Image (cartoon, rainbow, N blue to C red; front, side, top):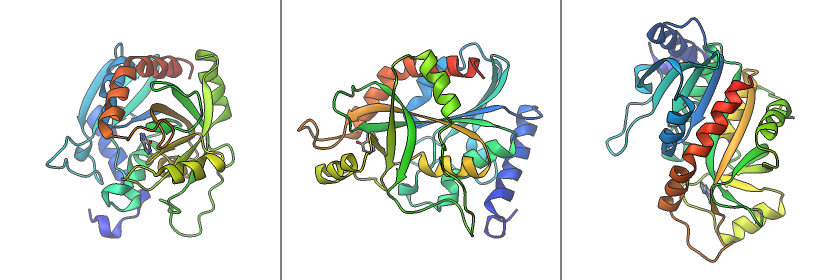
Length: 271
Ligand code: HPA
């Protein structure tokens, strides 16, 4: 197989074939994408899963080998509440310098494996006064401040209701009063300036982060239903007078992992 002459969709098809063979499944129903700090939430989500398996993403075509500094991503599979669930632990970020199709490869692989519902989770800065660290927020729309796309060619994918109103309604039933907000994707990896946050707030964003949007675009291209959930790990730059740091983001993720895992498990139970 040659990545240079294979389209992203063909590569995802190949990855899906290896995935189905490795897991001895004939398809999957749901995929949940979790950022690198989310392993504890994955453990809660898959607590009572049947036929649980886990292996490195890099076993599948098109996924990058683990870096020297960190662990590579893993794929976990299992049956939860009758749904064949793929948990994708760890994602490829554009700010790491990779080609953009890589950021969408996991979602496209899930689509090629039959997945029709994808749950995209992330850590985000909160832009709305009163938001609390550790609060889950449903993404109801996004603004792509990177001005880039994982699509190629004249591929006019509709993004109206990209974040499924029906899936949001289910989440709202499980967590009455859960907030919804517009997610602004910034290129990163630097955090925003207070002036940039002021701009984003003025334009209607309620969350800011550096992921998810390309995955949503690829998922909608593949006609999957998308639910986006941000965990507010900090208030955005300039809102508290404090500096931002990655450690506080990871810490907030760890502290909320139990709650997020339970929410994800309950959600899968409604599908
Ligand atoms: N900005 C961008 N990305 C983030 C933030 C933030 O404040 N918090 C977590 N991810």
